[in-house]
Length: 129
Image 1 (tube, rainbow, N blue to C red):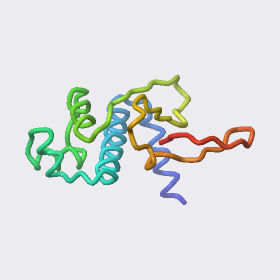
Image 2 (cartoon, rainbow, N blue to C red):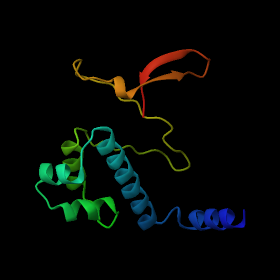
Image 3 (cartoon, rainbow, N blue to C red):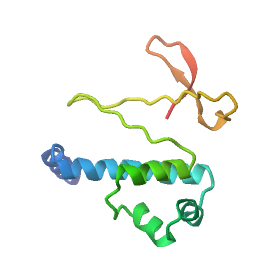
């Protein structure tokens, strides 16, 4: 328990630091990228080929050793069949849920479909992350 408290104290100490927040955003993007690649059966070699870069560059990205530009993030998202979206929220709040709504009716959303319970107990069929 002491280790958890120590770690949380450390996170709290740096939570407002721009470098810490940047690294957190890069880690979040990288984790989503890896999950999407796995879900869509896209290998590192496939991604490198789609982006026109080396496999070593992809490994560097996936290891979190790169300072990603928005341009690179947009290219990666496109290469794995996604769009890059940003969101901001007031300090002290976090984004609780992101919903994907297809504007193209022929996209197969079965892999993304979840049943969500609303606040009043009703259930809705939605596409959520």
